[in-house]
Image 1 (tube, rainbow, N blue to C red):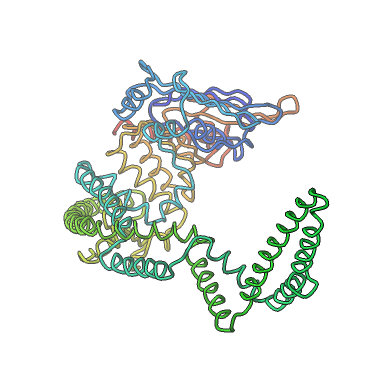
Image 2 (cartoon, helix red, strand yellow):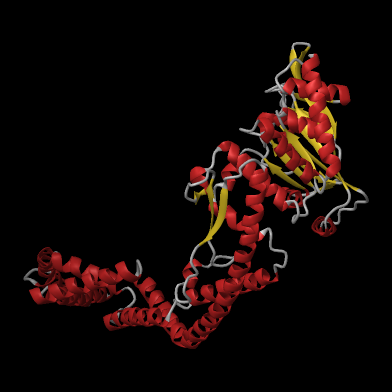
Length: 565
């Protein structure tokens, strides 16, 4: 149970410490007095997403400390053991948030991550606020409610284990291309890609060489003319070769007079042979310019082919070769994986058969529990003044084995709808379509009253469960809260005199101005204060004799009821 809640710098609260009793605690006060701030503070220390806007104006941080006392359920004990958190008879949770967003979270002085706190909180407290009315209207929540009543969940464990195995099979099957048909299609595609690349018979740098050749062919006339002009400079009359021959003859004829001229003659002889060699090369290059249109088209088509392959398989010929290598590997892997795929598909088929049987078993358990839940809910609603109300749990039809996989989830194939009719003669319709705010409050209270017998949560918090309720119905709601508080600690924020009268401890929340600053404070009410608060909530003057007498009678009635349970 929650023994103490210490709040510092939260919204309008400067510093506040609240002690709670083990049974029914009721927070009352004027509208806007700050009761919801206390619930917000409790939510914050239990791991709800931090909101810096809650930090009191003019301060740099907010901090909330909650002290829970034994006994603790086994799940709490195991979680604390995993964290190596030592405890004797209490758990102290503290959470701090600064304006710059830094947080500090501790359990019995040990720093813990937020997800751990949230997990721990699920075993300690169940906070019911107005948002749970909306949750109640969502059918995905309905299956969770039914499952809460199932005590032996071993079949769920078996199913969950198989569900995880199924996910692994599907992962492997996807990795192996999904099915035999997919494999065959993939092999056809890869085979085509390999053949297309190999048939092209590409050579490294072939594209660059062909591009250069095409460029030359496109400019062949200019090249031919330039080469011809150059060749003529060597080979025509008076050209370089003939001039070198003449110079050589002239020098040789006078070398007998000056022997040093022999060297010059030899050098000119070398120039002549070099010129002849260059002329031959130019002549050959010129002959290469002689090509036909078909040769040009062949080069152009080859370049187009290479360009097409680059679009499909890589930016360069090296990339295309790399793609080819990987394609061959993938082809071999698929061929070799056929046996694996067949094995996985057979094992998956057998697994689905087992899962179908387990899911059917879970369905049958749920149907049985649903009948019990319907009966108990209708009884609770009747006791809460909804005598003509009718409630029923509808299940989706069981899918066939061939369709089963489409509907399966981590907890079976069921989908559940809560159907409701508030008045006699009206057809059952989905809860979300017909239930009003006041009916939703009573329905949720009925639900919590039923769940109180099955869950292990020590504290239940109801934030204005009395929405849309008044009169004798308020007394019946108060009785339900009293019932729950005999097996669970209950904290209720309420505006109803009946709930205030049923409380084992009354806490009055008030807002006042101190030194030009608005602050929220609390006061534990004694018997006389409680009677005055009941009178005020009933709409009378808190000091009025008639109103006080009515308050005494109401409290006496509630005290008598509490003794009877």
